[in-house]
Amino acid sequence: MYPTSPAPQSGDPMPFSAHFTTPLPRDLREAGAATSWEQFLGEYAPSAGPLRLGQFTCTEERARGRLGPQARTYRATLAIGDTIETSTTAASGPVAALTAMLHDCGVSVETTSFHQLPTDGQTATFIEGCDGLHRCWAVGVSEDPVQSALSAVIACANRLMTAA
Image (tube, rainbow, N blue to C red; front, side, top):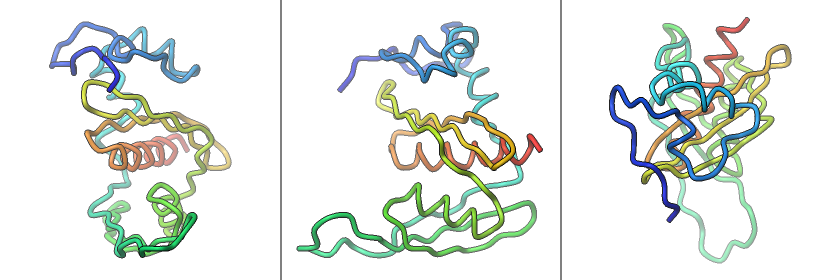
């Protein structure tokens, strides 16, 4: 366990970066030092956007005795605008699965940088993504590292979709 600053409360005046014991990704350090927790999340983890992730699950158990990385099947409910879809794909992990599902739905997000940092019992995932035209950073925060990463991918996709 890494020592960190306590989780921020509403109105917390500490800069976002002060909640971590290690530096933020280089491109986010200035913004992290200049904004509060709420301001940073408002910018890099927008709660509103055209894309939303509903249920996300791995639909199979890992077989005993299988060595090395193996594709597993994932299922997700995605809402894009007013359309709700269920998507299924095989991938080596949850981030790869979600990225493939988004691509199948016409949403391009290529992860160009991925960082996870602990903060007070939670994981913050920082993702830089590109859609072929635009590049942006996004963040997801959760007690579960996988959910943190999935939230960051969705936040990045939303930021890219609204940047166009």
